[in-house]
Image 1 (cartoon, rainbow over the protein chains, first blue to last red):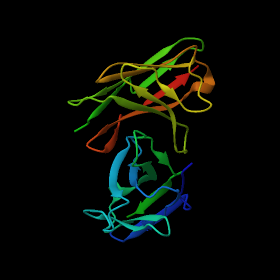
Image 2: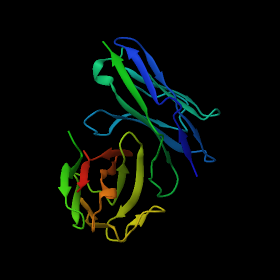
Image 3: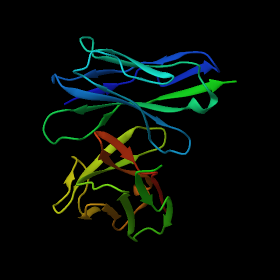
Image 4: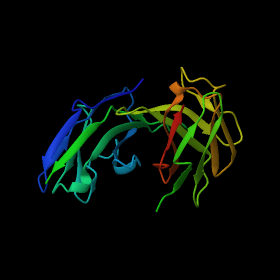
Length: 116
Length: 113
């Protein structure tokens, strides 16, 4: 079974600074997807970024980028120019690419605080 | 805009009663939907996979007779918490895939008194 580990329960960053959230995973599969989701106080889950394992290029979405290291099974999220609205719980998630298994496995989350 | 709609957002019920939560995919068909449960300050735990036109697939440890799932159409899945007890109080979230991305409903906070 796949597992996702987020080793940082809490992180804080100054507004306009950069912060990196860590995520590692364990799998024996070669093809899969990785995701970062944001859950603000409203508790609405919002997709931040998605990475396909067979793509070597790191995904980027505006101020959000990932450092995907497949051999190390690492998938960190970098938030640049942090804004107050980035404060939220961030979840890393894994999904197999094969078959009809669309289940997501989530890490325990990292609570990000943005200080003004 | 939202692609998955979930209602109600909050419900309070008495112990022993049943509560139904609806999850709708907007403007797209979802043959598969997922139901998650989230306790305070914890991660999302998958409860079951809802399949249109067939029985739901429950995760280990989830009581299928307590958490009834009905996916009668391609745009609607419902979760019914039967004979609710205080320990069933939690945040329940549904989700559905669209364009290889999983979108979530806004969640339902269930409080059982």
